[in-house]
Length: 488
Image 1 (tube, rainbow, N blue to C red):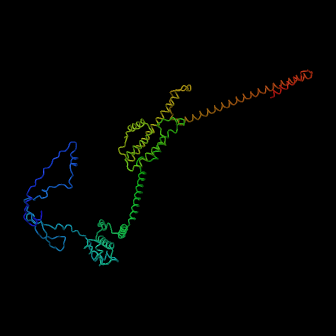
Image 2: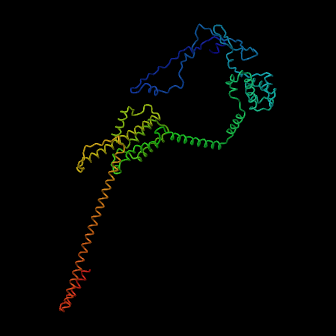
């Protein structure tokens, strides 16, 4: 439709429009080989900014069976209460004018303001601050200006703030609704009753808003720094909380307790045999370091899959074990009917799965130690220095009915052995005393014989001196010298 249709003027086409302009032939370009059609369409030219619409669609004629005219007709609107009649141009199809309400009347929205009577005012609405005339005037202006309280406060005769006007209006409306309701539950869902107007909160909101709007650039910069610091602190607390609530593994302490429990059976072995354990046993310090490093790497990741954490903990727990031991652990899991990876990796499932793997690894280590001890015992039995009369293939069968018999036998055997040792020591001491006595007695015998010899020689010398022999002096000197040598 155009202005000629509205004014009823004849439609005479311009002679130039009748001429068909010859269009230049469209150059057809062949798509080169090796390039897809979509890529060639993107690089073949600049795409249009708007979708191209043919002009034939813009000037499409209406069907020939409809006769459309524009007429100057009167109309009324239900949005007006005075039944004012106005005129406007109307599109008439086949001579039938349109009927119905004015098309723009649906946009006339009004607020339903509560009305009250004098009796209701005297019973429920009396207020020492507000008079009845001011209240009536307030409700009239609310009806007139559709609750635009800024306009109402500007035109209200007495000096009332916007908050006071709102408080009076909403308090009166709430009191009337609750008074007219049969029960409070009937109006509990009404917005005015459900969310009452709060004067103090509104004043605090406006005061805070005015403070924000009156800030300087320096104050805004300081506020931005405070907010950034608060955000950083909140993020740090969130990271710490997520680290404390790590879903895998249970905790580092639990892992250490499991490792200590795995090493308990080795405590009963003698210290000399602890140094000969197989290499499958794991030291607690090694496991602690590996668990600590794994937990530290998981703490660095703020978001991670629980299955990924489980894989990391399994690798840390079995890092010191050999490839054959890991395969035996997996084989044990398959024999127990347990999946190598949990299908539903919840926190409890993953913790139990990890604990089961550690217990299987501990069992395999204990089996290795048992095999080593059995091999050591068999080597002792097969050695050529075995006690005579000891059977080689004797197996130990514990007596379940005589609890403590082995311990009592060991105590008696140890007591007898200690008694025999004491007797041997006493006998050895007695023999040593007899030998020492015999040695001392032989020394006394030699000394006694020497004394008898000296006495005999002395008597002979005296006899020679009495006989006055000439060589008596020389012999006496010789004997004195020999006696001096014997004494030394």
